[in-house]
Image (cartoon, rainbow, N blue to C red; front, side, top):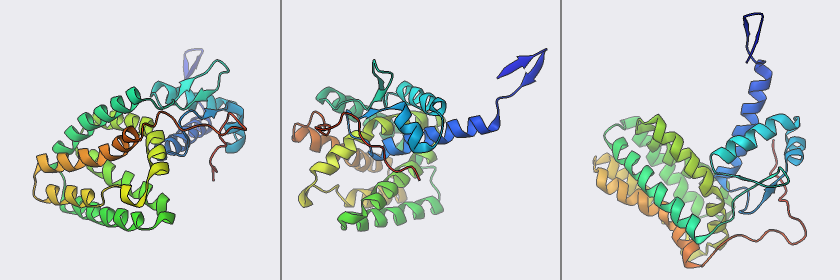
Length: 244
């Protein structure tokens, strides 16, 4: 914001809109696990992909670094943090603590329409897990399912914390998907169990099922001893997803 001769002059709307759009798109890609742990994100590469100048990309990367979804490098690029056993345990504990608490709060606040939405999303998640080519449907439906609950919890402060934790969890989910075999699919019944517990207004049961749903990917990685997903041998940077 600028001030000239005592007059208030707001920033151009276009500039703010572009900055926000770039941040939201990168945030969504990170949450979905489109970037592998250890991927280097170059400012100019992303600017070219978005069709923008470097400035909104730089601002988005700084914001994401403040949320611990990225870490700065000496080259002024940003890197998706590598996975380590310590990091996996840390994110897992934080998610269980915060998301579990918000779920308990949401149980008494959710209405009939919201519960119906959860039931529909739970069915879609189950159907998508039965079809390997429906990965994007699973990812989107799973996110919608969880955040329907978290928004009902009524805490904007904790909702922001949960979004940060999901940003940090994206590479973990990606690595877990790469390891999944038919017998290591996410437990389909957990989403249905969460919905049933909410319908009964059983906060403890809803939290227990949610915690198991959170933990499966972290437990899978820890069981396999996964520290990080190796970067492609012929390049240090990961090609950006398509920004349509």
